[in-house]
Image (spheres, helix red, strand yellow):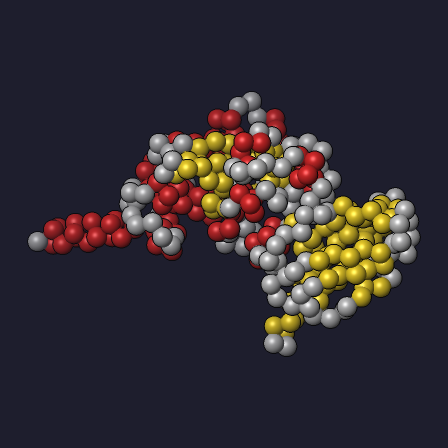
Amino acid sequence: MRIIILTALILISQQTLSQDGGFDEVDSYVDGLQLRKNVSIEKLVITLTKPFASPTLKTRAIYYWIAKNIKYDYAGSETGFWKKYPSDQAIIADTYKFRRGVCSGYSHLFKYMLTKTKIESEVVGGYGRGDLQTVIVEEANHAWNAVKLNDKWYLFDVTWASDLSKKVVDFWFQTSPDIFILSHYPENSKWTLLGKNISLTEFKNLPIYTRSFIEMQLVKSYPQKGYYRTTDNTVTIDLSTTKEYLWLAKLYDLDRDEWFSPTNVEDRAFQKGFINLTIDRKGKFILRLNALENGDGSFTLYEGLLYYIVECK
């Protein structure tokens, strides 16, 4: 009788976890697993996905495990260490073995694990822009995934889902193509998954939306102009934010290699609308916008949320 009861409980649990919807139960299941570090990838995939009937939930379990357990190798990224690998399989093996890697390791491991569940996916190479270092990007520098679920393709970035605080970022799971294109441009434009593609030039002319800015969904609509040319040394930017912020501006002089502040920023108040600033010199600059939020008397500063290129003639 005891065996029958346990079996029934397991069946009920599996049935509950097999329904599409929120992912709390999937994430809790993955968090609760006690796994040997040297377990094979194949056995890991079976353990992660066995309770779930839905391809979406299987994908979520794998996405969550990778984002939670693989750490980004900043040192290896700087030295180009991961570019020296002879094959994708070698990158997969060492990313899994050392629990550390860069975007190529994350995306190829994700694809490999999905393949073991017979879920179709692709590694997508292209241009990623999400911080000051990618304001000017001349060559492909990032990799992510497209996954086919229920006969429809979706976009995922499991690298960006991995957070230093060990908290998995949900935003990059089945991200809307309209939002994904703000920071990711594929070398093969079919993987934008947009009805109407934009060109690489148009992508590079967008503002730099940092990961925090996109994940926080601060604006009602995303500004499309990221390059300003002015002859009167003034710049006006309409952000149409969802909440009121005090916007703080800093400029980086590309010729003098120095940061400085604009001579004035009009409307220095908590508001949702325009930012007007004046620059007291000629040249080409990177404009960085920080935001200060007033939370009922306690202030939160968000640094480097948006970057623009400004040219004063």
